[in-house]
Image (tube, rainbow, N blue to C red; front, side, top):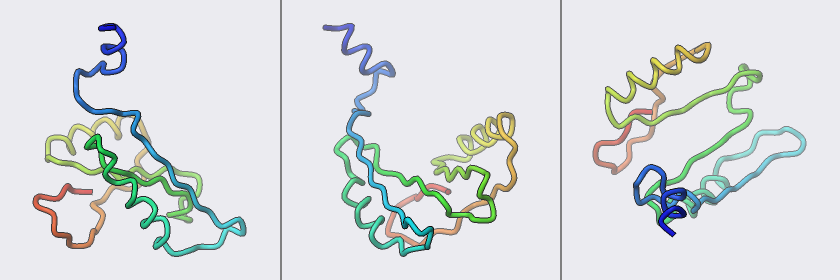
Length: 113
């Protein structure tokens, strides 16, 4: 039984990575639509009980970069940002990198995006 626990928790943390959820929505005519409904659906998945929060995957967000990938990363420290950007620059052709503007929220010490 210990081997099963070790396989399921190989990083020796208490996070249940299997508590995932998914939501998808698209317009079959390729037209844009409001983010209101996806945000409301994803808000239901935000607190999954495992402390990992929620995330988004989008297609067509940057139509001028239709053949490229976009990574939006949240950093909790300057050191994490520095290390991650070094890895990305070594592994990918980075076309553009900038801090994303975000709405002011009632969050103490929010991450940089």
